[in-house]
Image (cartoon, rainbow, N blue to C red; front, side, top):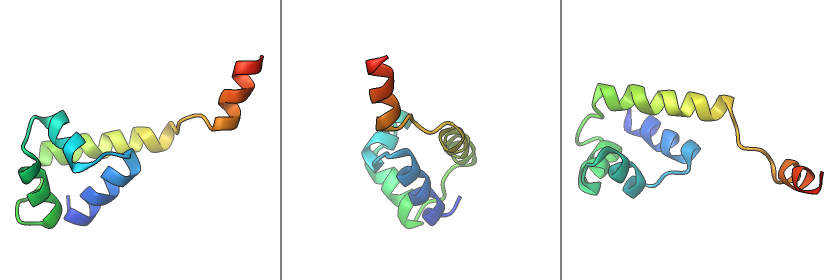
Length: 73
């Protein structure tokens, strides 16, 4: 996974470096090194992130209009 793809995945999921670090029990510094390309993203992490992104893209959250409609029905 390239640093650019990591940034895109985080943006799609709405996660910060801090959130990813917490999820993976890694330091923010390690995640920052992945994002700037000084360390490679481990393959298992890349596969996991791509799976999360694919799920989120296939299952977007309901829109605000949908939520309001459900609340009034």
